[in-house]
Image (cartoon, rainbow, N blue to C red):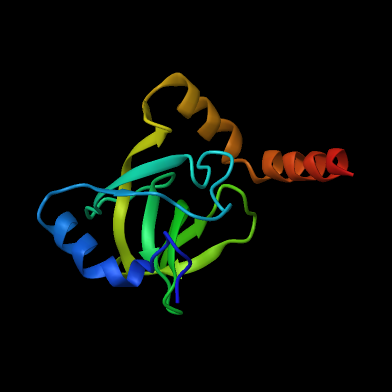
Length: 148
């Protein structure tokens, strides 16, 4: 049984897909830490739209894993076998995600109630730095060092 105030996304899968298929947006409040520092659980949210046929590197997608888990991660690569995804707070790649597994793509991000411009300087600078796995590894190492 889910904790009070929490629900299973699987219970809303049909609704999410219906809204997106009919041209609407679905606001999602991500849980977990995989998209830190960009998305903070309990504070930030995203709007999803239907994923078009032209998904590209750096898009953040909402997808369903083969094991039944719903995930929000960034496209870090595209191969003939599918998409390569990774959370911003991770270095392990998830390979060969098929287009059919992708439910929606993020078109808007909110820090609290304030919208983050995905074309703005701050977000583009974040992408420039954060897409480098080297920068991530250095950041993670420094974070571990200073937590001690």
